[in-house]
Length: 321
Image 1 (cartoon, rainbow, N blue to C red):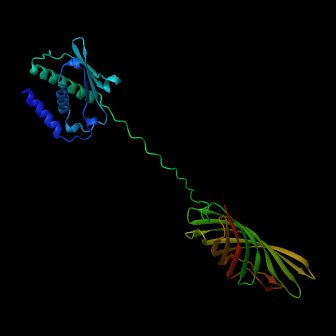
Image 2 (image 1 turned 45 degrees about the vertical axis):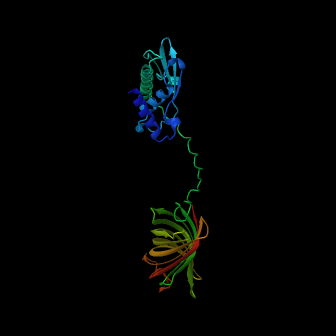
Image 3 (image 1 turned 180 degrees about the vertical axis):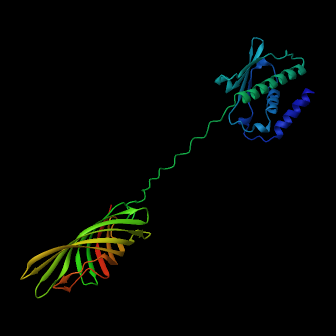
């Protein structure tokens, strides 16, 4: 009966795919004093451990069996070297050279003991194969941060402008302005502007009229830029105040001065052309009406006045920071 079992075991081990046998089946080292059939023990151990659910163990297992004071010591590596109860002592049935059946029974009992010890160690102290070496770290990609220092995205704009206003009432003013602007959100712009003007006076046979003015304005409106920040457009609503000092010189009355004020509201489309990251050219043309105008009379006759429709123009350079 035992011979039939061994034959079946041998047939099973030969019929199964070998795969990587060195990693799936333990390697046995049996001392001759154990007095067993080495090939029968090997086949039975392979049969007991040949469960396909275990798969590839991924590490070699070796078994050494030695005699120890009338008993036998089973040492299973690598658990024995790791101190995980990889050593077990058993006592096999007595060997009888004249009785082959006793030798086969002794071989079978040793094989079962070895298989049982390996299975228990795999459950209680599972071994993990060494992890593969880590993949090389990808090269560090250094990318330049997007340029946030673009026109229309910075916080402040400082401009120097030459300005001109002409009223249909006849008065003309020309001069220069300084303006400071700041965005309100993404699409809006606010501006404060101050400047000075020379007033186009008039001359009559009896008097000569001259003037100079100071101006202050506040504005707010829509401000957009093209996709590549090369062109910008603003539509501003501006309220501008004039403080004008008129001087009249006549041969009979000498020189006289008068300080008058005017308030004008106008709509001004404005174009901006970027010439560098920080510098742009700006040009604007506006139209409006005076909410409070000035009428100038010389000898009772009305001359050039800040009345009617007003047309304004400006041209200058803008620094964005």
